[in-house]
Amino acid sequence: MMDPILLTPGPLTTSMETRSAMLVDWGSWDGAFNALTASVCDDLLAIVNAQNDHVCVPLQGSGTFSVEAALGTLVPKDGKVLVPDNGSYCKRITRILGYLGREAVVLPHDEQEPADPARIDAALAADAAITHVAQVHCETGTGILNPLPKIAAIVEKRGRGLIIDAMSSYGAIPIDARSLRFDALIAASGKCLEGVPGMGFIIARRTTLQGSAGNSHSLAMDLVDQWQYLQKTGQWRFTPPTHVLAALRSAIDQYKAQGGQAARLARYAGNCAALVSGMRALGLETFLPDALQAPIIVTFHAPNDPAYNFGEFYRRVRERGFILYPGKLTAVDTFRVGCIGAIGADALKRAVAAIAGVLEEMGVRRFSRAGIG
Image (tube, rainbow, N blue to C red; front, top):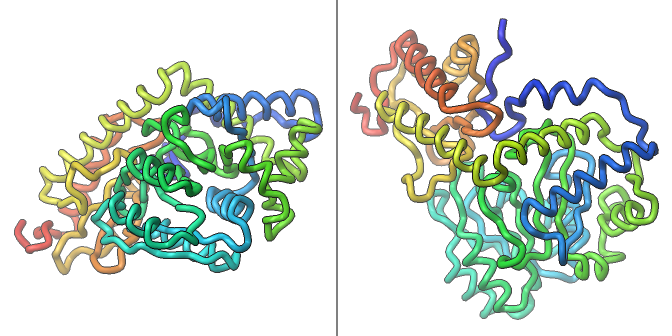
């Protein structure tokens, strides 16, 4: 039986070449592994043209580990962070700040509303004590893409620091450090680069990082200490995810060979178009309008039919070879389908066919919120 295709925002379906890279064992202090780390960090900087003013600090763990490390290291203990909130991962940032004892100012938005640059500007103008803005680029709770270039320009104009959660956009959506100023950009191995999960990384402004010693709440998550040790020895301070890094090295090689960011975005956009057009042909409705939809993950309204049950729907679609993602919204019943991973539009078309067959088997007839078939 074939492994199911992961239609999720990470972990995701990886190539055989990426998986095969994990068949070699590495010594964590060995010179060859140190060279592997350095080459990956160099390429991670280059993908967003950040080689001049930034450094790359890799970190063990999921992406959230790196978000917490960045906030805890780069925001002083008396700092104050503005969090434009239009989804679950924005809320997670606010929760992290609470754990860290850093003051947060939440700027609430509707879940189908992109972060508003004008409201961010007004909030910064009204409160001189705000030191940073923490902005999620692509909010994977819904799939919405926030207007990062406009937000970054406002934060720079106001002289504040910008920390970007680019977990679900880095490598696919254009980000250029030469024209977009940020103190830190955070992403992870198991997203749009199509590696495996287990490693995050922070692309931090060198001068900002150098001035952040003593801020961190945690030894393990102190990015200054991690970076200084890497600079001095070429090694990670603590046991690194060796196989994850080797897989990421392979995934980046494939990324570059396939055409880099522009090609990755084009493939994901094709995946998203095939998915959305197919699902709409069935009568299913997207949560977001097309203009706000990032080609990363799509949220669909659940069918308004008593025969529909997500648990059963999920199980049956999985039996047909596709793993979906539950909804992340509190006010409406939804489910999500990812567009990323080492897959093409043909896989999304097959997934739509599987979903159609399952809904028919379940006796679901009414697909729209209004209950119209």
